[in-house]
Image 1 (tube, one colour):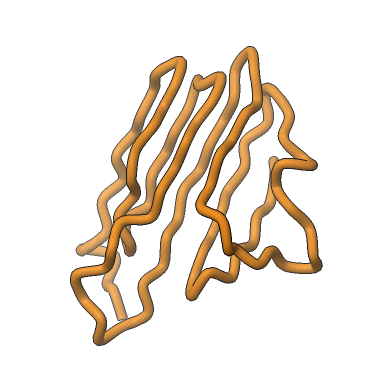
Image 2 (cartoon, rainbow, N blue to C red; image 1 turned 90 degrees about the horizontal axis):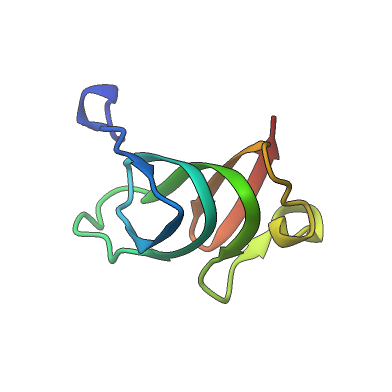
Length: 101
């Protein structure tokens, strides 16, 4: 189990983001028009590796994620993306859930 003290929150603010996110770190990606996100290979295999990020689009809403994710309730986040809304995404074992605010 990852303790709160081990979690950091990098904030990324750029018009376009392309990068890899590490497990057990909460990312804030704000002010983007598009984002391409990959999942970094975990270095610790003795625990669940939880990929977490928050994204807020401004002026666009294109999100590319790794193939092979299974979304809760059969939903796919791409069908719900909206400019100006904040989305939180959680991925464990290629099972993904999201919520929007």
